[in-house]
Length: 369
Image 1 (cartoon, rainbow, N blue to C red):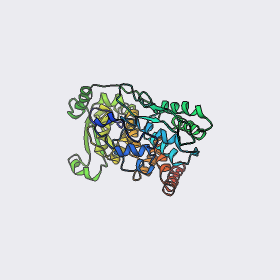
Image 2: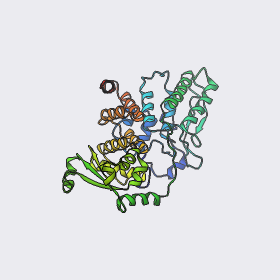
Image 3: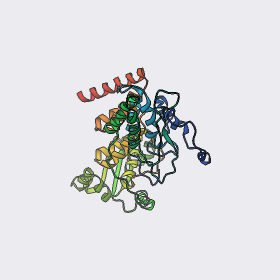
Image 4: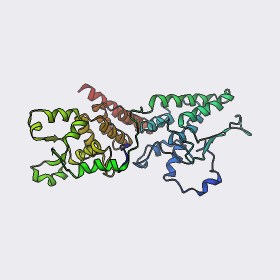
């Protein structure tokens, strides 16, 4: 998305919203929010989930995606086994980047509430409703615990489940390895123009062994597509390129660098992320993302590797999990590796078992290679 970092770069809820919600426009992907509230593994881990789904967005009724899941995760009776589908689903969502610390600020117009279990006609004591505004998924679990512990003997299983949710939050959530800084769009556009207009470029990247579809366009350069960039930018971003362009070898003398085993699209995407931390390309295909990741990893551009890894984590699915896992193991990408394992574990028993076996085979074969 232009001008934005590539981030990539329920039975437990009240059955109807208060009357004030009727004036709101219908949220996008309402079915997905309902699936989160119902802990519907088959839906949440399927290709139905939009590629641009934000796992930390805020819904006016459910809060964040993790907050939508918390009530039923706590309600399930006596299932703290790690193999239970609900826990595997939570691990999958955390691997996608869902952050239990994302708060529903008081300035956000969220009207939903939860809890309120038990009462007349049941064996369970009545619990008070908990308003979502001002909470994150972590604090919401603690709010549940505060009420549940007032009736500890009746809600023993739910107290254990809440503790297990906190344990998984702590052990599976992705680390906060970067700080978000607001940058004016004009700054991003300036760096994009610097790359695209190619003024004052003093480095040529000759991309060889390109995809067959790109070779026709590259015929004039002897089978290599040529991209242009600035030595100052590349040398600042990459220690590898800094050493290459400073050497007395041909690359240092001519400013011409051969980039082998990559497509022009992949190198172009990598350059966009180096210059602007964003891209104007719409939904790059996995093969392009993997190619850009390989180049960024080869050049040791850590922040670009991190952006691409996050995007690949979001795209883990039935068609990509095996290939992504192999790349994650080879390049030691812990977040992507965990996301692939979580996806396999969240699948139905037979299918999930087959995927987990294949992942184990891949890891074993690469370890012994």
